[in-house]
Structure formats: structure tokens, C-alpha cells
Image 1 (cartoon, one colour):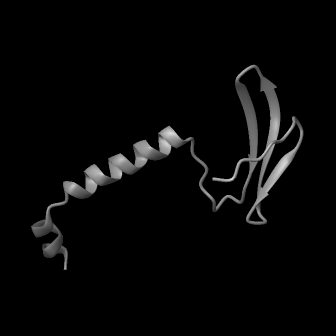
Image 2: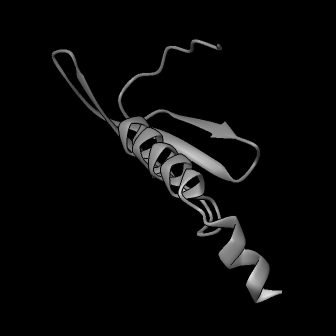
Image 3: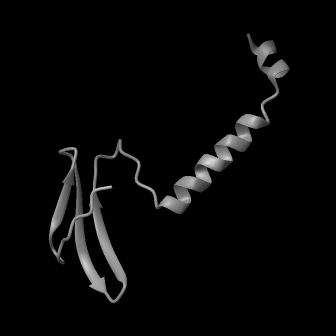
Amino acid sequence: MLALSRKQGESIIIGGNIELTILEVKGEQVKIGISAPKSVPVYRKEIYLQIQEENRQAAANIDIESLKKLF
């Protein structure tokens, strides 16, 4: 993990097309602005993990015999 220090109003560029900007710092909370192409999904980590778990559960419930009938 790369750890960088930034002040309010300063930015970090990732991959040439994603910009993270520190918008505000209040106590222990930091507000971050993210500029990224629409093709790049941006999620809070807890939401991303929830999506992954739901996808795993859906994949585990696939009826192989029903899929075979489609082909």
C-alpha cells in the first residue's frame, strides 16, 4: 500500500484518468472527491464487498440442468 499525505484541495492522479481530491478534513473524517471515467465503477468498500457476496450466492444457486436445456 502506498501512503501519501495530502492537504485540503490537493489531488492524487491514478492511472492517468482518475483523480482523487481532498475536499475537506473535519476531525477524523476526510471528504474525498473522485473524478473517473463513467466506464470505471467507483464503490465504497463495504458496498463492493456486499456486491461480491451477492454474486457468489447467486452463482452458487445456479441450476446446471436448467442451463444445459438452454443450449
